[in-house]
Image (tube, rainbow, N blue to C red):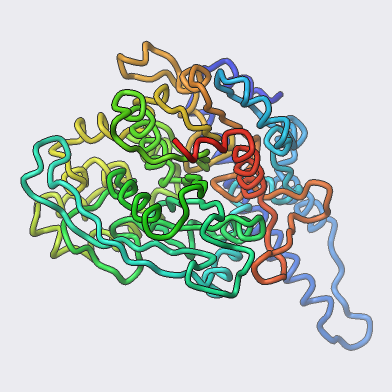
Length: 496
């Protein structure tokens, strides 16, 4: 085990070590790109027609620095000191039935197995982003449903005013199509909460929707307020992480109008969307126990892909690292603030100015609480921070993280909670004390790709939607196998 792994296992996280590892991986990524450029240049020189025997030859110095670049590009020191398969850590709750889940889904403990040159956390993004763009252009033929949602202007006070808007639900396979006879109203449903600034054609990526289709699971992507492209806000209500009340209205709308009484629902959060799914489950499961006379959404199982845990800190620059904080910051300002500037200023023009001048994503969240239904950041985090009430979740919940995630720092999982009710425990310890929580921490995977070539030369899988090929994702495979196993083991939860 590497010294970095040792630091994590000791629950003593030196964030300077994490940052240093991140910076080294950036150097490796640049080396990879330089090698690609050299290969293209040399190939062009060798294949270009020349007179006589004037073809170029590689010099000794070119061979030496190319070899050094290759060592940097494949992160050879890390490759030799860190296991390239399996998990760094597996955190498991107290329910013995979780052992049955693990037995039925061995891929959880296997972890991803990326090709040598795609082990780098930044390089993994390159083929993954290219595929995402291709899939976005191809587009999945969703059925779009427009749904009106309503919420109190102030979530913590009496409801004297309402914030109404329209969210979109993108459904595949469509309920209104006869092209997919293997699907019906009883087919299991995965509700998706997309990532930051994402939507149904890019969750980010949509390979999980394709994989779900191949497994007989219907996908319904909940494009929360402000996320649907080309659709502006109708009221000054916007929560970057999503709104639990809106999600519950979506659930009951689907139950009453689209599916049968025995349809199984799963809840799947990706990146920023994980916060919504965890908070929703804690509120719904607690309500079912404390107020059984009130109806609560029944979710068979849930998965969170690359969460950041404490959302009051997750988007700080020292946690959500360069260049990703800067890359996404401007996009968030443009998509959510500038596109809705007039509407948001009608509610609080001073906060809009602060949003436009924000220097980090965390600052965006802190300021935008006034548009989410709260008067200050303290009230906001006390109500919707997903780590507040992990113990209340009774729904089987699988979380997938990676040690090398450059956006959701793995140190977040192992740090002690600053909140008094948690008694100084780390979030990892708190999850071990839950009934049905599980966290699988892979050595590699970056932020979402989790490319995996196990038993193959390349990380390639069949695309069930087109019949072609797509990148093979360990996370996609685990998610579908987990949902299938949970349906067999915990299937009666759909009747709660």
